[in-house]
Image (tube, rainbow, N blue to C red; front, side):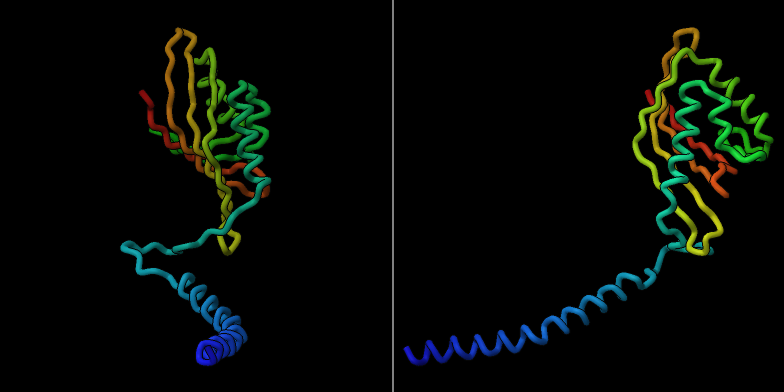
Length: 179
C-alpha cells in the first residue's frame, strides 16, 4: 500500500511539474506550428505573387450584389450606377473597355431578350491584395432565364468583379450552360 501511495505521489509531483512547463511548451509548439503553417509550400507552378490575398471589404460585396440584383430585376440605370465611368467587360467572345452608357446598352439589349430572369446565389468572396493594389469580389450563382419566345435555360456563372474606390471597373464572366 505504501508503494502504491508513493507511486501516486511521484506521478502527482511529476504531473504538477509538467503542468507548469507544459503551457510554455504549448506556446512554443503553437508558435512552431504557426511558422510551419506559414511556410510557403513548394507549389508545382509558380506565379508572380503567390498567396497574395486577404479577405476584402463587405462593402465591395454589397456593391457587386446590388449591381447584379438590379440587373436581375431589369433596372439597368440602377445596375450601372455601381460601375465606374469606364469599365472593362470580359465575356465569352468579348473583351472590351467601354464607357458606362455602352455597358448599359449592352446589358439592356441582353435583358430585353428575356421574359424572366432568376438568380440563385451560391456563394461570394471579397478579397484584397496584400499590398492593397487590387480589390475583387467573386460571385458564384445559377442563372435561370426564359426568353420572350418561351425558351427556358439555365447556366452556372462566375463573375469576377474588380472594384476601385467603391465602383466596379472590371467585370469578367465565366458561363457554363446547365442541361
